[in-house]
Image (cartoon, rainbow, N blue to C red):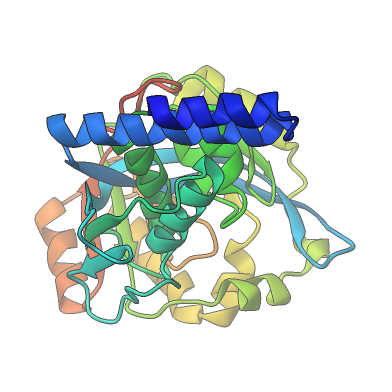
Length: 337
């Protein structure tokens, strides 16, 4: 590090751009931090929490073909596990995953997040080895891939001695996905734009003891759901008023609404039937998360064993989970249960 700092001073003194000198200084400090981190702990395992959309309003269709949304996001204790370690012996980053069919090449969001971090932090020579244990189902509307990417950004930053601020990570995340920035909140946030504009809010009062997730084997293409959306049939509820309702009363009084649920049900009618079956099993509040195909219910069913058998007989993913939070802006991530 001292040699590089001297080089930076020489560059500055010879009239080379100040920005170049600063970049050399930053790179020197980061590499020094990486070396120091390697002597203490070069590996960590992080929870990649799933998320729910407690409400999701489609505000408008934009000129670029995308849609502006307004949604209340909430993290769950269900999630993948990402183990990340420094791997100086490798020629490139690596990713292993226990779920068949999950790509482990540079197209995976974890790999994209690691590439992004190294580019933004200007440390291209650092190498990481990642192992991902999948627990959040894919094509589910639960943000599994986005959460994996957020954990990769946080973990890479931690292993390198925190050269970037959490605000940096939040802003960088938008380069590779709309939902990733949310996970740098405390776990509850009002998200607008395409989901990348994050307004953290306080944890909801009186969080439910149970949240049930149910997903059929079928998935849905998000573009197909949006293409099927009839803007004339959207909810007319004001997103800010919906937010206020949740902030005052939590899920007990907050109104569950998702403008993407009707077009998803049109694309996959059996999903609407599944929602009806869940209500028959005693769930009062049931809603689809994101663009599907996961349905979530607040609170317990009338008979847990009967509902579990119902899901198993139909090969439905199902689990009982709860809300989880973290301290935003800190050097801690979401804790395991």
